[in-house]
Length: 632
Image 1 (cartoon, rainbow, N blue to C red):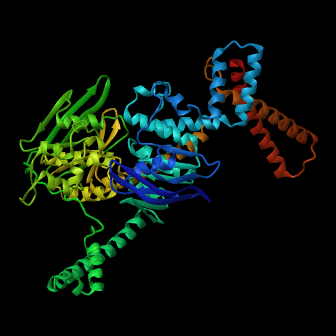
Image 2 (image 1 turned 90 degrees about the horizontal axis):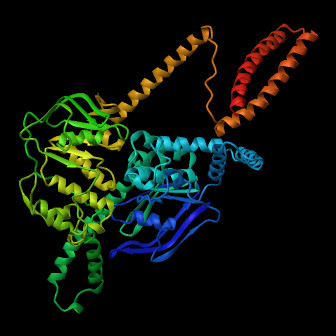
Image 3 (image 1 turned 135 degrees about the horizontal axis):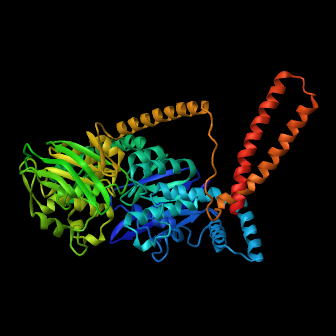
């Protein structure tokens, strides 16, 4: 069943042709990843499909009664409203009922009319299965690390927090079509893996832009590539896409090579013929022009060349001995010791907010340790590629920004090239070099930032979330460069693919200043953690069995609180029904035993056992009912 369709879309932005007669359809059950070079128009395409932006030409239509949810990179929220109000601003009927119920509950002393209203709300919330919905809200907020922020104004949040609020909002909508733009940015690995599982299970029709190759392979069943204003569809996951795309590129490159050879031969023939055009065979002249058109095409893939010269490292790189770091009352680093060696490759993982960025700033000298020693080698030159791009100025041209770092660049082989030539190798041809920084896409800005980091010739390279906003081709080339990088490499990333490919060992930030050094890549660490969790679960089962054999202590009721929550009111009503049923069953079993009509020994034992179980459960539930009813 077709949910969404677009026909003959055209879009030009900043004199660049992004969509050139694109036709696209999205059917129920299709989970599509949209890929393509930075600046190709992927985000613009999503905005057009979701109705946030219009095309210059063409039509987008969504099937009647189909709800569409769109999570934008910009995360536009109502800044004067709280997180909770933003999540449900002008939207969910269930939430409105919950808020109304909680308002009356907090009032305390209600009039007779308000008591009736509260009872009606309670019945309505039961019909809407509101407790399950509230549980889902808490789960999503918790997994996206937004718990405790419900009443915080959106305007006070960081950029990453706003992105997570926008993500929570679209997930809670539970739309028929889920459209996501770089959903894994600003999420830690635990949240990414949770999101991966959630949208695989709960959402059937998805269109997303992502650079996360593991995420793409595990969630999507189709890949659509947008390049040069046109789209190509691959019916399979990321691995299938790579295989088929490579085949297509090889065929296309072979055709271009053949055309170039034919062009040289025909050019030689054209030059040898008389100058008067009419004396030449017209069919050969026409064929020559067609061959020329093919021969002068770009090859299917032009890779970036990241091969700048690096300063030689000495024996001592960077030594940390018993380093402690506090930020206010928060301990971010506790007695940490590590001696970095030349050529070492370290990945850093851990939840958001445990001090990964603060640790990097200790290494770069932006932060100063509370106690301990940090000793940097004389020849160590740190290059820090951060998540922020503060040094990029929107009013400057690309060529001006790069030239401020170096007009002439020395390459690894000793040759020298101009800043303009270097930019061309980074997929910024001369016309693009004249663009203002403010007009670039997010990925193009990050590519300029990476260039400026590498031009400073570091031999200790620190990369903070280097895969954010890069297209897949740029990621491939960056990974190949980093594999050959002779210096020390430190990567903070949630990109599992990148860490598996580059990291030799991991610094695992566990919180409270604790950093564990794991000897392996991310997948190996994940396997080890799963094995540890499995052993812990087995031990817990054994412990439960041992406890079951011990005599049980009487459970004392908890001290009552002032009010019943919505969940507790539901529980109280259910308990009354359950207790009535248990009392009826207890009486029924008692009558059967008193009558003495049952002669089957096994059935008689079963009745006695059931009577004991029902009696115990009745005591427990009656105690709980008494506690809740006293509070109510």
